[in-house]
Amino acid sequence: MTRHLLDVTDLTTDELRLVLQLAQRTDLPPVLAGKGVALIFEKPSNRTRHSMEMAVVRLGGHPVYTRGEEVGFDDRESVEDITRVMGGYHDVLGVRTLAHSIAVRMTMVSAVPVVNLLSERAHPLQAIADVLTMQQVHGTLDGRTIAFVGDYNNVSRSLAEACVMLGAQISLGCPVGYHATDEELQRLNLLGSGAAIQAHAAAEAVAGAIAVHTDSWTSMGQEAERGARAKAFERFTITEQVMAAAEPGAGFYHCLPASRGVEVTAEVIDGPQSHVFAQAHNRLHAACGALAFLMGVC
Ligand code: CP
Ligand code: NVA
Image (cartoon, rainbow, N blue to C red; front, side):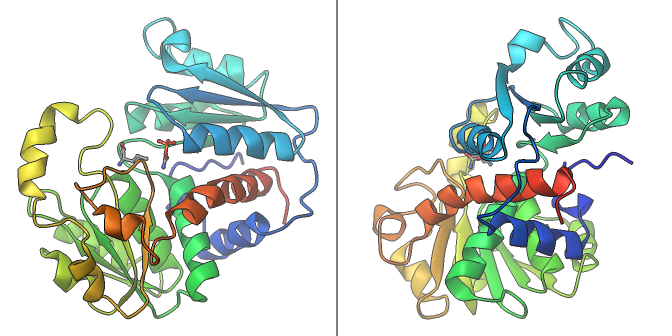
């Protein structure tokens, strides 16, 4: 059966641990030698594009970056026709879609793995890099508290899934209207030995946390909502005062791109507690681990 990676939960906990181990190996075999990987982007990207392209190169393969309008999902051709055609050229199809449903439709007909490079619902490669970075900085995540303050959407959902699967408590601090529903918290709490809790204030959410994460308040495609979001999130900026409410020495994490003075102050993101560039660089290792796993390395 062809495996796909649209959500972190497409992996079992043991498989997530394997991907994290593979991500740290320096001796991965060239499993993509002579093979292509399509990377289709309907939205802009720096980290995801470059880390995936270089991960494919490291594994011996050839990445083909393609802008969404070049293939034209359901415009120039159907999603299904594009997927079937590309699967004849490539051994993995990576896609950053405007709609998660497109990635799901691709998995329905694809004979090769489909990897989600960020949808409005999930960002699994980011979450793998996030937990990898936290393990390197803080050691095991089992039993530790990790906070996410901001919008409950793609990045935070995938991070929450990975944390609960690895035995951590994810503490969400989200404004009302941009929060995880009770049903979503229940779903998260069933994913593993960790737990998911939620507060509606930043300092409350970070209490006891060894790591504090945030993300843009306005995601790609939501630009028209920027004003309303700025108002809704105005008490959710990660400041030095918020960091002081977390565990002493807590790390600060951000998937990037960041807006200094909006979701995080410059003092925090550019300060000694910040690990954002290690986190960004771990996107390469996370991509290597995920691709190696999908190609059958164990
Ligand atoms: N964090 C992340 O996915 O960044 P890009 O949008 O630049 O790929
Ligand atoms: N939530 C952000 C993440 C960017 C990497 C977005 O979707 O734009």
